[in-house]
Length: 440
Image (cartoon, rainbow, N blue to C red):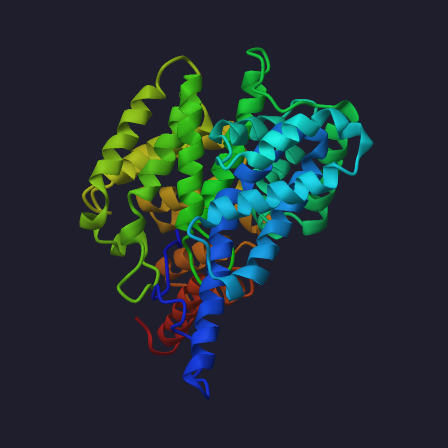
């Protein structure tokens, strides 16, 4: 409901005026360097961890994570003085590789690995992309508890922080950290290997991988923190990895890819010229990427093979209805409501029920939507979710209960959200206050 992208694109735009021009240049260089390292961490850390784990074995997963982190810290220490290398990714891979080799040479148990270590030290090639998928399947091994599978995948293969994973699961950082620690211990204890699963294991492990990619895309499409609503690098990574999975010829992979592409196609219209959030009814649909929408429809068609109907199929079908409509008023809200009814049956989620209430309000009216929202107002897990309060405020405004609407907007402002979402909520709160004082 409340999504978009902000920022001028100039990383130095908000720097304070400095006493000297040289000081300002140093600040700008440091800021740009930090953003580059952050970008490389998001795009390359999973691939580097996967490559190192493929060489040294799954029991050294912690080591692989550690040396990748050390390489990134080394970049922040060295690049300001030596300059950013022509191939930053290759530099990080080589440094991480050397650190791993230095550590492992101290272990007598790895003597047999020395020829492979020597080959690895000479190699300048980038890690194999399939290694990252194999790492994701390791993290989603059926012996690992389901909640831990997704948390471990997001942490190790996608570079998520524990805080980001906690927000994605609407849980605490301690709970996520404990899941990850237990999963890593289990990998070491049971000597689980990093390889593509056998056919009989594929369905269970694929479900966890797809859930991880779904959460990865969601974090990019609606960033949980910072100054921007959109992190295109995360969306691109999720789309890319999902595309690799299509070689498995599983219909639900095509369904998830279709869902992602439908959303990516609408990104450019989600904000105004100043980067402020635009709701669906205010977006310029001419900015939607029809080429990507056409691709999404092709994958949606491929997802129809077989008899399985997943939550990804239903969500992609909902996105297809929006992509097909010329305007908000011509949208087939009846079809969308029916799809949400089906989705609520196969995916017991408060977020699904929240979107269902919105669809009901569009199809039948604000009072019907308000009635559908009532169970969620008593749902404790949604009390700190700003969209729940925003939907409540929106429906109360349509019912002309302006005082209650203003209070709902205030409660939304008390919830965690990023800077652009907060500015939107503040505008709506102020508008509700004016409406309450002076009327519509």
